[in-house]
Image: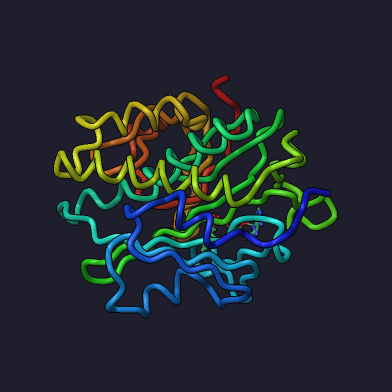
Length: 263
Ligand code: BT5
């Protein structure tokens, strides 16, 4: 099992430099997303990382669970200076940054499942999830990534960890630095062009990393309805385009199952 000693907060702050306004590491926290959402005075680029999350959340009020020190559970607060309709790209942007950081730090095979699950290992199982929430001019993006989690510790059989995917000596401080650097860089490039994901290369990077595009998918929508078809694209606000027997459908939120993978 990898070393589960704590993330080194001092080193994290030092290596990130002044690009991140406030970087806090705590032993325990309820949902780090919820804590940042309640902090109305937090500056743009605030980070909260918890060694153990006691009330971790997924999308649609689902839960995220991870043993102490076995993964990275962190949230970032951004005040994106771009029009609200394109905020739909934020979770995808975080997925791209996470994917870039994990691949460059560990070399494990990885890809994204729309909207933003990180799949890893030869069987491309879920190693990380992202929860993006907003309130007023604030967006909070939470990342939960399984790092040294063992098979016995995983909450569901469809999950994996970086260790199980082949990277068993990961330095969590270094990985957190890499994720936050990529996230900062992608967010800055995106903001510079007013949130135009095509113009800053974000859309191309997403398409490149995304295993959903080109796959036959079954999408369960928020209301419990489902649709099946071929995932053919992402629109200007980050929604998934699915070609079904009844025509093209645009999906803003839903759970995707890859019925037949593209590659
Ligand atoms: C997600 O939701 O995947 C988003 C997870 C975001 C977690 C981070 S941790 C820091 C921040 N603070 C929070 O409170 N949340 C964020 P969703 O796609 O709904 O997937 C949730 C489902 O994934 C659960 O219902 C479980 O089936 C499964 N799951 C729970 N814990 C998992 C884990 N450690 N690894 C893989 N799958 C997990």
